[in-house]
Length: 201
Image (cartoon, rainbow, N blue to C red; front, top):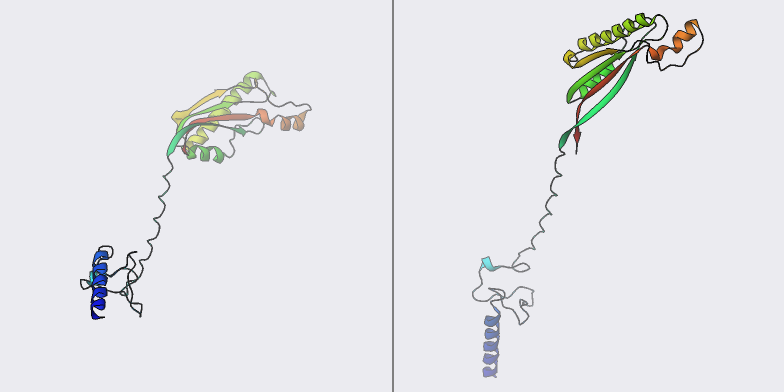
């Protein structure tokens, strides 16, 4: 009986030593599962050290999963320049060169990355002589140029033209105040702006 116990112990020791390489410091079976005592404690070999403690044994907790890496930031939008063109119309009272509100024109020019040109063309209605209306349309265009320059627009970018009564857009009948009111679209300065704006891609 004593020989059988010794043989069994020797066989167990040989089995343990043969399997130690799989989990250093612990006794394992042929499936590399660590043997445990009846109290659930892992069975050490004689060569076990604290540095060899593995997860689930000797109060070693399972390692917390590392948080997933944050997604890479989206690439910053790339700004590029685009050519733009916009037109405005400034209207006048009858036989007047007094310029009204130009804030929409000035604000648009201020929004540009670069200003290439501001073309001003004056017009007049057909009431009066053609020669007078031609001069009137020129004075209107020059009045707008002066007003824009006073608002900070670069005068070197502006050009002036005038068409008098030769390019009507209104189709009017009647007389007196009714006719004058109807012809308002012909009493104007067209403002054509060329420039560049930054756009995001």
